[in-house]
Structures are given as C-alpha cells and as structure tokens.
Image (cartoon, rainbow, N blue to C red; front, side, top):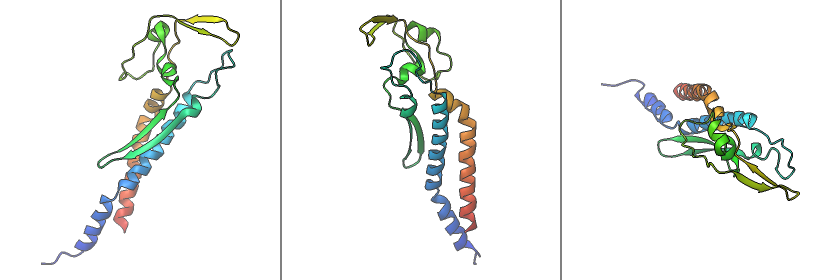
Length: 164
C-alpha cells in the first residue's frame, strides 16, 4: 500500500514545528506596540523644581522578549526608580486615589508624611501623590488587539509553511 504525498505532508508538519521564530517575532512586535502606548500615557513632570528631570520616566520604558522551551514572553518594563511611585501613587493620597492600577498588585501605602529639601534648602512635606498609572492601562487597552495580531501572525506563518 502506498500513500501519495506522505513525504510532502511530513515536510509540512516539520516546518510547522519550527514556528518558534514566528511566535518570537510576533510577541516582540506586540510588546513594542504596548510600549508605545505606555510612553504616550506616561506622565511627564511639569512641576516647579528644576532638579527633577523631565521625560526621564518616558525614556526608561523598554521591551524584551524571552524564548524558553515551551513559551515566549514579551515584557514591557521601566528601570526608573520612581516608576512604581508614579504608577501606584504614594501615601494616604495614593491610597485614596489609585484608580486604574492593576488589581493583581498588592500595594501598601505608608501613612507618614514625607519631608524633603528643595534646591534653596527649604523643607517641604507631603502626604503623597495620587496614582498616575501608565503601564497597566497600556497593556489593558491593547490586550485584545495584541492577541488578535499575534494570532494573525501565526495564521500567516502556518499558511506560508503549508504552501512550501
């Protein structure tokens, strides 16, 4: 008994098994999309103190993609030390006004006032700042589009693999 086209079919299955580069590129591309939204949503300091760099937080938003044996992960992150304070807010003010932050992140707010000195040596106190989330809203606003785009890239990869 002979099955016609079996070799061709087996080659196509082998090509489908090598979809990792397609998945990696799709995930990396969509992480960049989410990063672009996070940059747009990220607040820029416009207060009175010149010692606070303007736009530093926006410039600290990066992406990476990691491929493991059975998964590809895209990450959008910031390495700015103050990013969490902006995203989640601080003190009693942040605790009272933290709409839009991730419900999956447990945040503990200090209840004590903070004191700091300005450039002229004057002292100031604060009870915190409200949350100004930009990372979580960027992901949530793009979630459906990202999943759809990755699915489209995979379908296209499968279609190309099946043609050859």
